[in-house]
Image (cartoon, rainbow, N blue to C red; front, side, top):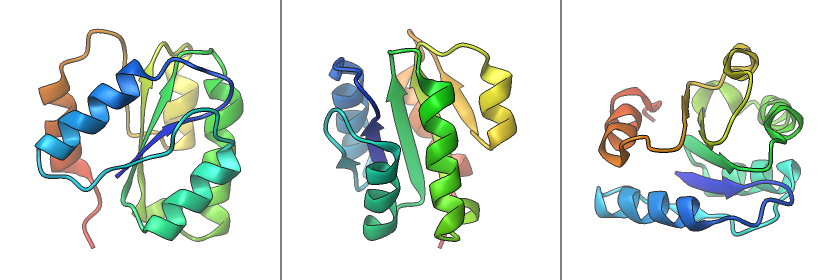
Amino acid sequence: MLVAKVGLDGHDRGANIISRKFRDAGFEVVYSGLHRTPEEVVQMAVQEDVNVIGISIHSGAEHTHVPKVVDGLREYNAFDDTMIIVGGIVGEEDRLRELGVEAIFGPGASLDEIVEFVRENAPRY
């Protein structure tokens, strides 16, 4: 699983918490660090061969960055094998779902429910 912070958003507390929660649940987690471009996220996902990308966004730029991640995964023929989830403050959730985002978790979402969702729905190799 790749936990990614895309764009200028400098708030990484949630990304660190979710990374730790997934590690504690037995997942292998790669954390991108702050201020990644969508292209860098795609490269990390492809290089690490992840089956889940969790994008943490609090900047309001999800409709700019998420489509670029989706397009990049499609270019590498990795989209169908990669589940994308988004966490944070997100507007117009339907637009993200139309792109293929599997789930959107807002502030206050249960960490256990997020882990369970991924465990039940992530693509298997």
